[in-house]
Structure formats: C-alpha cells, structure tokens
Image (cartoon, rainbow, N blue to C red; front, top):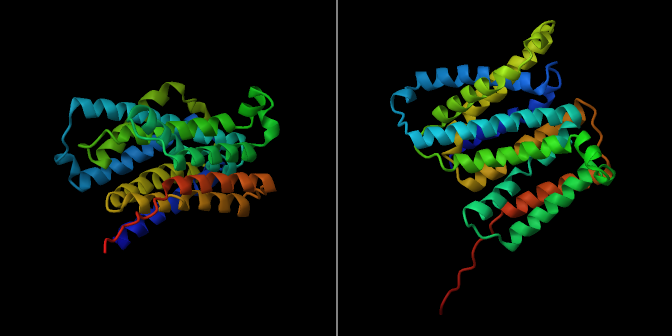
Length: 292
C-alpha cells in the first residue's frame, strides 16, 4: 500500500472538511465565492501544471475537451449549490445530504451504463433517503416551499451535480487530472462572471479576505493538487473510505466551533446516510470453494 498517497489523500479530505467553516466567515454569497475559488484554483493548478512540465505532454482531443467543458459546468453548479446550502442550514446537515452523491452515482450507472442494481444498492438508497428525511425533519416535508426553504433542495442539488461530475469524468481518460481541473475552473470563471455582483467585494474586512483566499487557494488549489497526486495511486476502496474524513471533520468543526447541536433524530439520520453509503461501498470477500 502506498502510505505517502494515503497520507496525502487523508490530509486533502481533512482540509476540505473545514470548507463549510471557512465559507460562513467569507462574508460573500455562493456565486461570488465560487467565482473567486475558480480564479484561485486556476492560478494554483496552472502554475503546478506548468512547473511539472505536464502541459508539454497533454493529448487534446475534441471529444475529451467537450466532455471536460460539460463536466466543468457540473462541478461549478455543484459548488454553488453546496455553498447555497451552507447559507440556509447547518453545515453538518448540508454535508450529510451532500454525501448522498455516491448513491446518485449508483443510480446513474444503472440508468445509463446498464449496470445491475443489486439488493445491496437498493437497501443503501432506501436507508439514505430515510436518513435525509430524519435530518431535515419530517415537519419540513409538509410542503415543497418549507422543504426548499430549509436548504434541503440546495444540498440535494449539490449532491446530484457532484454525482454528474464523477459520472462524466469517468469518460475522460486521456487528459491529465491537472488539465481536466484547470479547464473546469476556467469554465467556472466564464459562466459565473456575468452573474457576479462585484460591489459585494467592497467593504470586506481583512478577516473576510483571508477566509475567501483560503477557500480558493487551500480548499480548491492545494486540496485538488493533493487529491489528484494521490488518488490514482490508491485502490478505489481505500479512496472511498478516506473520503469519509471530509464529513467527519466538517461535522466536528460545526459542533465544536459553530455550536451546532443535532437532535436525536438528526443524529439517527446522519447515521442512516453514512451507514447506507458504507454498506453500498463494502464488497465482502468472495467465498472460495475448495475441492477435496
């Protein structure tokens, strides 16, 4: 096992787990924050890509570039919806719903790749759906308006678009991870620029700017560098397990630093979601029959 790669991925997930804490201290809305995040990530990853000489060996094809552009739209919408969810609900709750993404990946694989939906996957989906109900609160399901005003809709959309990002990226095999992400963040800047209210950047405190730049350079640029530098060296199962460092850190910071106190039903809902996801990812060893 590549210990160095495991350590890099663990650090990346731990840092990303604090993004919600940083977000609530930036002082700017979701669209403006994602726009700055795209700028910072483009600069950081572009420099790393250039210094490592990766730009010289890229193999560009029209098909892959088109898919990368589509994937870029998906990942930007994923970020915008996640930060919108942070504005409306507790970080722990938003992160828990956001981590339904692997379940949506399973569903997409069944619908579009002809993958078989196993009993294990169906049970996991049911558990995660029930968990999301308990997390948001059954009372909020009394009307569509109440449900979406709780932030549930934004968090769910962020999970859906993250799943679409993962699903689309599976079809991109020739471009390096740096070229892929560099292109995606440029797409983000282009599509968000017309919607950014630049007046919101005036009057921000030094503390606000530190959190904004931290979200851009650390949570996006540096984390993506660690992630892409390690994920290709590790088995899928290890990557799936280490990904759970992210929500654990996010929930811990929400409770310790932001004073979030989940109810018993919300704790039960969180347990259902993560239990369902772990259950869907776990593959028991195959029994081998020994012939005498």
